[in-house]
Image (cartoon, rainbow, N blue to C red; front, side, top):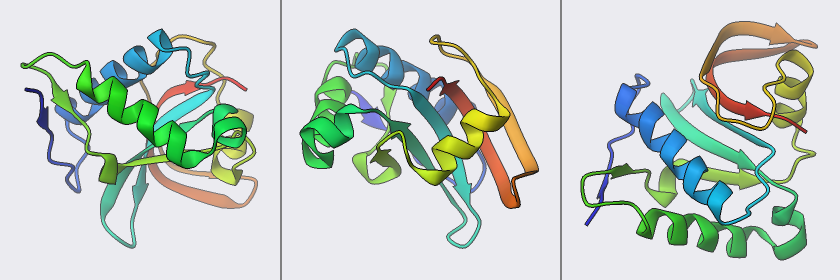
Length: 135
């Protein structure tokens, strides 16, 4: 069975890889992911994988979280998976999603762009790792 990775104060390569694999599995399930990125929350000193999809509005966040659980269940035994506690789902009108879209457009694939210590329209982004920003 796949094992949960430990999300720490530092963004690890296992966190980055597990995030990319989760997005691949969600893409295969037609989850309509428009934006996906790790975001650092300095108040809590923790990272959260944020996934934005119009399906969050259409089916509700609880049902979208079920898609994440289903995608994690498809991971191989050797793969690390991200605990549901470390994932946040939102719609595409979320403020941070919109700010990142304004600053960085990635297309529909899976990228790996580190975006640290930047201000977008007066909003400071401490640290993020962007897989997709394509609204």
